[in-house]
Image (cartoon, rainbow, N blue to C red; front, side, top):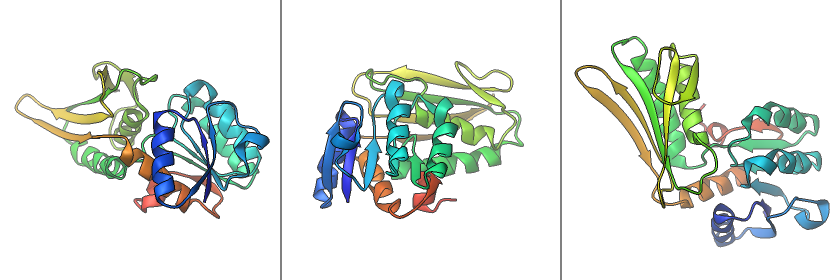
Length: 233
């Protein structure tokens, strides 16, 4: 594939290294706004930029009928508009709060556990995420995805940054140096606690997942998630 990287920070550089190892071609490495000239006619765009510019980056690429794989979090209030643009332009858009195979299996496990725990009202639920201090959004997109998975399968109706209270599922967001990403879900009663946890050791899993999604999306139209790529639906 010809891949354009929109956003060339730490993730972009890892994606470049791993994509080249898989014999893909990197035709653009952009830290600036994408244009027809600087994108260099890619087969797919992989977008890992900043919340402030993600919407405009994705919108432009989709309007040029270029499929987009997006891993930027913190802009999701505008996601429905992006999905509409993808449909109108008969191209493809795939958003992932986290592209790691392990995390996407963790998402499925989280939903299953939420279903199992829902009848047992003695247990309270709490989420916790830990990331590096350079992460610009809190809570993480991964934590939000976990929270939404629990909400769909429980009596919670919203999440909030803080301790769980009534129908609001709590998320603690912690920032520490050099932590790629750790996510935990706790169910606690007066007598015991159940915990499931995913710990990323480095960013390679995220990058490989994004490349896998880019390979998978070729020739498709519509809006997708990593569940579609991994056939976890």
